[in-house]
Amino acid sequence: MMAEKNKSVKIVIPEKEAIVKRPESMVKTYRRIDSQVGNQSVKGDRNFNGQLGESAMHDGCNGNPKRRKKQQFINLDDPDDMNDGVTVRFKEYKNNFLDMTDRQKIFTHYDVISIIITHDSKQAITVLYQSDKLYYIRLYQLESDDMNEYKLMGKHLKCYEVQQNSEGTIYMIPFLDAGVFRLMIFDNNVVLSDIHINELLGIDSSTIAINGVHDPIINACFLDNSTVFVNLFHKVTKVNWHFKYSFERQELIDDPVATKMTCTSLNFPI
Image (cartoon, one colour):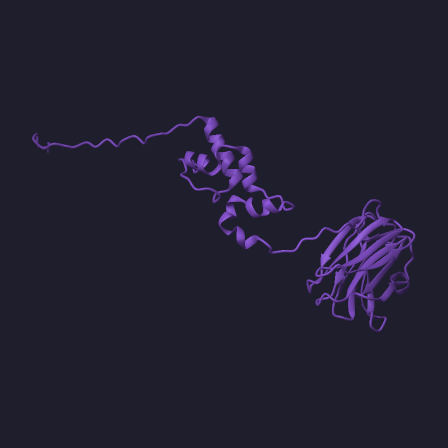
């Protein structure tokens, strides 16, 4: 059957999508600004690639790299910068960020190996290195200028970090002194226990730590306010030891466990 001659057919040709092309240098400029000030840093339109538009570039940053850098970064040691130079992203909330923390510079005079904040938020405890024969354990009070100090002295020391109980009132530092594994438990005022672990386990002092590394090849944690769990590696025999110890009663809890490791003496499988 043939179509009627008088019936008209309307053919609709879709319009081609307009393609906007911008110089590659301009697109790179937008991308660079976007990465510096963040997606929520400035107000402005965005182009078809999702980058910041021209109004954002000029109104938010004024095309000045030095100004962009000043808006984004704050010099914490400059009060004017703290009050007036808050980052653009949080500019509307800058008053919420002022005076949130107290800052104080302390010169330790020695290298800081590690630092922890006690669980009661009252002290910062640092491990300071003077030499292989002397470490300092310093307890800095956060609400005053008071400081307490313990010295670790020996022939060839290695220690790294202080551990604390759940209340943040009792502390300990495991360390290695010329092959002798030791554990010092203390509080703010006195040493509660100084444990010579080699004597407990009946092992020799042949373990030597790696030069230039402060890892003592031993670590420990509190199980409660009177019991600790200790784990160490005897390098020459390649035996990993772990045990529980009551420093209140000054005795082992159960028998220590020795595990022969299939590794080189250079490894530390704890």
